[in-house]
Length: 108
Figure 1: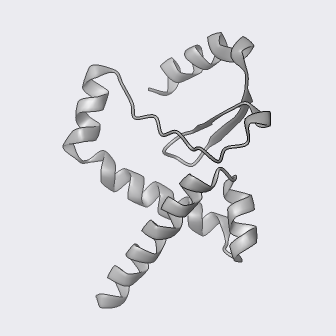
Figure 2 (figure 1 turned 90 degrees about the horizontal axis):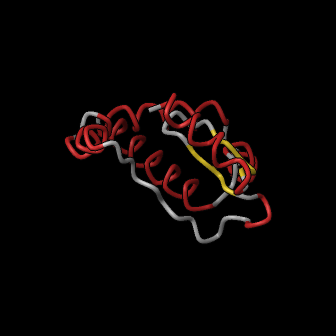
Figure 3 (figure 1 turned 60 degrees about the horizontal axis):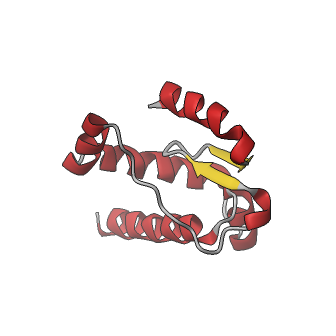
């Protein structure tokens, strides 16, 4: 059981590092010799666990979701949208905002 807790803490830390890195999952995993499918699995697992919290429930009720600003993100790529499932939408520009709005309505 102690091993499970240390594994959970390891992946929580790695996911936090990935989210702050501004890298794609593939880039992050390649640089750290990790398997991308494992990172994706743990992101889904931990996001599902957090979805059960009341704060996420409140966000869904009021129609807002949390947006995290990543200061190191490469501005040349445009907007990067990371969904809780691990899916990334990269390179959105101001002209893509109507499309992004429609997409987000479908996903939320």
